[in-house]
Image (tube, rainbow, N blue to C red; front, side, top):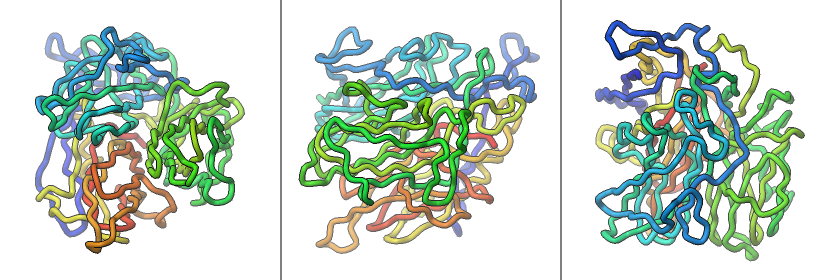
Length: 465
């Protein structure tokens, strides 16, 4: 185990003096320490092995609490979502292709969905028996909503399980929970190398509103990943070593023929309705979700739409590359023990000032990057931070005009790309996992299209350079 002292990211012209401590899990090999029963991390390159590398899986459902479709749930039924924040545990290791190996599995990538909640609230998840994440959240929901979000979670240190916490202001509230797995990160103890995460400046791959047409019911569209050229001019390498891709998938479900539906991203052409989902949509809704998915043998992925007519917008934010030099750190991922709130623009220490319409602001992560360490040893340069980006509150510009818009976060030293991280309207908070790729000065810029927006970021992992 190690610690990372972090000074919060700051807005230009504002100083944040508070220093906090977060805990990370060492992915490196360990050697006996001077105190019996303890170990100290060893960060020599030759000891890294498969540490922090990603192993993609064909998407699979590993938990479902609903009585008509239970998965790994001995007593199907809704779970309490109440003010006292009750928790329950689910199996994580040995599920959906994740090895049943506590020493070899560092973290797991899952899509967690809340459905049929009886009131508004939020969900958090963390390794059973580990430090509670406090204010951090993964999914925010309102009554009767179905809300998914991608997350990187750690297995419990004792039994490898995952603790799910549900909160609602309703004293008798309940909700169902669904968990789909997409891959996992290995420790240095795992014998097989995986893939490295290569974050890029986000770029748009496809927008079906621009000529290709909406996806019809039970139809899919292939997207070429290897060799793809994005609108920003960035290119995904045309190489068999590109084994996975990180996408921000937005469903635009506002056509006259639209209906409630879900979108699934798969490495191969689906034959039947997929058993997993990435974005769940009601009619007239525009909603994003991050996706990490393997690339098929033909270098493509497929986006499937269940019902009605739905447009999709796909932005590439990174890819997974195999066969990287094992003595290097580039692309290795270090997850935090539990999500940690880096900033919240509603808080006094950040000025309690929302981001205005058509405005952008810069956040510096230089102190954060410089302070991340394992056992007191800095992990070195980092290319990105991974976490949950949430639009907390959007207020209208004019009293009679409802507010709606999007938020884009991108490297501070590039031209603002035609992409989005979040699409939001007035109402409940909107979360989405994000990979914030740093600019040359270890900073990012955030752009808000319309309205007055408060937003926050909960970090869950860092990516090494």
